Amino acid sequence: MKKLFFTAIVVLNIHLNAQIEIIDVKRFMSVGEKEGVRMTIPNQNKEKFEKLQKDWMKKNGSSAVKQPKGSNEIQYENVYLKGTEKPMNLYVVLDQENKNLGWTGFFLMDSTNQVIQNKTGVVIVLQSLFNSSMNSLYEDSISLQNKLIKEAMSKKKDQGKEAEKYQRNINNAKDRIRDAESEILSHQSSVDLNKGKIAQLQSKLLDAEAKLKDASVEMKKTKDIGTAADELMSKQKKQLKKLKELEKDPNANAILISAQNQDITKIAEEVNAKSLEYRSAEASAKILVKGAEKELDKAKDNLEDAEKAIKKGNQKITENSERITDQRKKIEENEDAIEKYNSIEKGKTEEELKKLTDRLEELKTIQKKYL
Image 1: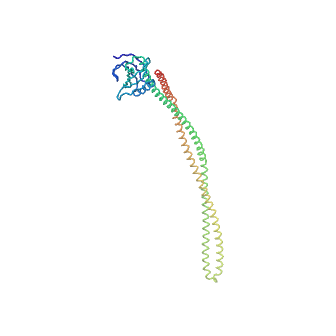
Image 2: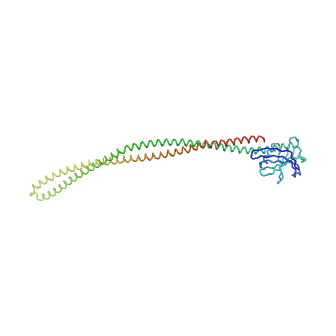
């Protein structure tokens, strides 16, 4: 019959509220039927505890004995209990029981394999092993909690950086608005200036068209002079033709030939004079036409440039006005994001971080019970 000789009650805060019991057991093991002790270790993994137990034994001067292949026992030699001078052997059987670990141990005298009756010393060993397990569990929880705190602090830092980015976006948007407003003023000034020029440029265009028309009239007049010169040259040719006919009988036509020569000389003088007049008038008219055409082209270009400048200026004003609208929208969006961060997210993150930090301190406080 099992006899309860020690009950250790431990309250854990890692989703565990369990009573830890150390009870007497009697069962067959490698050296026969022996009395032993059993306890349940909460939330422990068999492989992990084996290492923990091995380190604990080594720290206390004990060492594991190699067991036959297939044995479910772990044997340690040179185990000392408080109140017992001679060393003993400890045989341990570990059973994984869902999330808990069943620990059964047999403390036997080194030479006789007799069961030790030093229950106080046994309890001290089991309590120390139990505490080591609990300490390890809390160490894992503390490590996880530190990780969660680190993640929360990183989240807080990232949120702070995000808020700073929102503020930079606001500042940049305001700078762009100022630049756009300055652009609008500059382009509006250019539009107003060119609008003021339009009437004057249109007047200059009309003047240039009138000058070209006058120059064209002058050019037409030179053609009339050229026509007169051509008529004189034609008359001269006719006279020369007549002279040749008269010269066929020079004696009979001596007087007529003399008169005809005089007429031809006079016509030649008129042709030379008219030709000179024509060349001079044509040269002057060409200069006038070319100057008028150039002035007209310039007047057209100036008027076209002014109209283009007005169109471009108005387009730039529209673009910058739209840019201002977009930037004001960005400012509003980023201000809303900052307000949300300051009023909700920042406090929520700080509250979460405080809970995690408080939980860490709570875990450390509980862990100290198992040191």
